[in-house]
Structure formats: structure tokens, C-alpha cells
Amino acid sequence: MPDDETGTEILNLGQDFPPVPTATWEAVILKDLKGADYEKKLVWRSDEGIAVRPYYRSENLADLGAQTASAPGQFPFVRGNGKAWVIDQDAVPLSDAIRVDMVLEAGADAIQQLGIALAAGVEKLTKLCEDRPVDVAAREIEFVFAVGSTYFFEIAKLRAARMLWARAVAAFAPTDLDSCRMNLHVRTSRMNKSFCDPYTNVLRATTEAMSAAIGGCETLTVQPFGFEEHLALGVQRVLAEEAHLDAVADPAGGSYYIEALTSSLAREAWKLFQRIEVGGGYSQALSVGWLAEEIAKSRAGREKAVSSRRRALVGVNNYPDLGGKVLAVVPNPETGNAPFPQFRLAEPFEKIRERTERHTEAMGHPPRVLLLKRGDVKMRTARANFALNFFGCAGFAITESEEYAGTNANLIVLCSSDPEYLAFAEEVVSAVKVPVIVAGNPKEQIEALKAAGVQGFVHVASDAVETLADWQNRLGVTK
Image: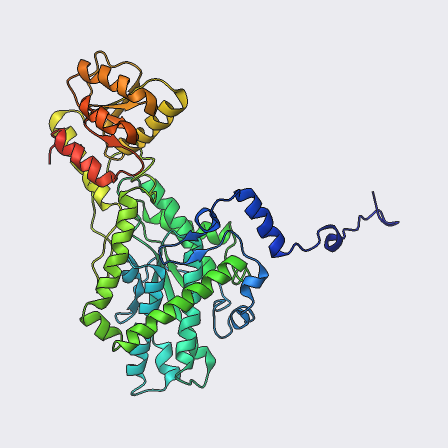
């Protein structure tokens, strides 16, 4: 009903939606959890060890006044320079640019990237200031960052980078605070790209470009990887001209979540910077191999997460294109003078797929896997889907059936429920001459199933790279 003579309805949002205290929200959450552990259920820990809450409120920013009160283009430049990014598909970084992108491509997490960038930048600034004012020296330093696919973290990373650099330069007492602004070029990463699924590479590059634009880069390069250059340019044009990401300065500013992430990353990166400084600075930490060791640990964690499929790399270790082929491997784009070994997360799976393709060319067909389904409909369907994705990542030919008579499969995967597996296995193993394995991890029956002739198990705890390579060996796949 209208609330006045003009027919205008007056909304009293403050009265209709009174503030709800955090304690009230928490009480409801605890009730819904029904005794489950809050931290385990709702708090996510990132690769960097940052605890990410299920929600954020204004009180989470209570101590971040200096960070949140500044305007775009103002010190400490956490909110960017107040201008839209510039498309630069042909970017050639300065020969002495600080290549933080190569740190990411080596497997470093966001905190390591920020801490190393700060240490390298301060060391370089100190040297340049020997023969010129800090206001001149600081403006000569260029940073090149890469962005990965952890969307919100990448936005926060770039915001934290500018804030950290501004505070570091301020310690050199410049006469103009604008000298504290970071010259920041950003490009999309290669680490998460694959020759297995070029179309997904386009999607990844798009979200990465969004992170860079929202995070406040000055110039941006979308690097094509398995897709054409015009698509890379098109990504930036769509973000600017259709999504209008260039129309608002610092669109992430004020987001409780992103502001909290920015602060967390900056705080932990500053601690790493201090450790590097105590150890003699960036060059010393690099020469003694300490930085390489720290990054290697991060890389190993990333590789294990993808290999075990705890982290999905769509098209590579999960949801593969069963009809697709691995693209001909081309040299990686320019990598600069990389101080650490570069890698891509998809490489182990690409090697498995390439091996399958060599076998297909030699034998006329890929290894054939039969997903043999029986019993409980829900369990057999779920386990067949799991096995389809699992063995599809190796490029095997996969069929599903409830019958095994007359099959020409090289490997049979039983898909059923735990209580039904033993009788199922005893029947099939005695009737076929090819290896039989089970989809699932029926712990109480494993020994009995092995005694019945089952030769393996695939489940969520299986390491996909190790398991697929092992079955390639056992099936005689051409090396």
C-alpha cells in the first residue's frame, strides 16, 4: 500500500531489517552444525595457511583504518592509481624488471611472491639510491606479477603488493609520496594451463584477467596458451567494453572479505620480508638456496594436490574431454631470466596422455576400460562416474555396461556398493582373462577381494598420476 499522497511507498529498511549481532549469527551456525567442528567444517585454510572465515563483517576491518580510508590514487595505493588498466598484449618488461611472475611460475604461494618482491625491490632501490634521489630511483623500478586462478586471493595479492611497496619506499623518506606508487605490470599465468584442454585455458585466462583488472594492475597481458592471440586480446576487450571493469576504481574496495585478505597477505608477507632481510637480503637468500628450498616446498604441495585430485584442474585431472587430443607441445612463451625452475601443474597428466596417444598410433586403439555396473543404483552410478573421470584423464577408451560377456576390454572396473563387491568380484574374475579392479575403498573387504583376484582399487584417496602410470605399465602401453 502507498504510504503518502503521491502513491510512493516509503521503505524503512533500518526498521524492517534491524542489525543482527555477530553472536546471534554464530549461535544459529552452531545450532545448524549439530556439534560438528566449526573450524573443520567452515574455515578454509589456503595454500598460504591463511584461515578464511565463512563470512566477514565490518568488525573484521576494525584495525584496518589506514588501509580502508584512503582513496584510489592516494598513499598507500592499496586502492590502485585511480585509472583503468591499459591493454598491453605486446608487453616487453624492462630488462631489469623485478620478475615476480617467475616466482609464481616456480610454484610460490601468494605470501612468497609478495615477500620476495618486496625484498628484491628494497635491495634494488637501496642500490639505485647510491647515485640518485629516492624519488627518481623508485619510479625506475618495474614489477611484473602473474595472476593465477585463486580469484579473490589474486585480487588481494595485487592490492597488498602496492601497499607493501608504498610503505617500503616511504621508509626511504621521499619528498613526493607519489614516488611510492608501484609500477605494476600483470600477466596471466602459465602454471595452471594445459595442452589437454585449450578451451578451459581461455576460461582460466578470463578469470585471471578479471583478478588483475579488479586488483588494480596498470598494464595487463593475457598470454594465449593453446588458443589464438586474437582471443587473448578479446578477453580484455570484453572485460572493458562489455563488463565495464574499467568503469570503477577499485571495485573490490570495502569488501570485508577482500580487505581482510589483503591485510592478512600483507602482514604475512612482511614477516617473510623481515626474515629475508635478517638473513642478509634477497641476493643472499637466493645465492644460498634458501628461497629455492622454500618455493620447492610450496611447489611440491601444489603438485601433490593436483596429482591426488584434491585440487581439480578441469580438463586435466578431472572432467576430461574424452574425445579430445593433447595439442602438439609448443615452446613456452618468454620466461625471462628465471631464478627458479618453471613448471606447469598439468605436465604429469600431459605425459600420461601423450603416452596413451603413442600407444594408440602403434596399436590402432587406446587401452580399453569397461566400467561394469551392478547392484545399488546410487552407488554404482556414482562410482562409474568417478572411474570415468579417473581413467578418462589418461585418454583411455571407456565403455559402461552391466554385462561383461564378449567384452574386448583390457581392464574391467567393478562399480557397485561395498556389501555387493565380494560376490561380484568372485563371479567376474573367474570368467574373464583381463585384470579386474574395484571402484571404491571397501576397507573391511580388501583382503578378501584381493584373495578373490581383484588387482587394485581406485578411490578419492588414490594418487591419479601414480595409479594411471602404473596401469599403463601393467597394460603394456607404449612408452
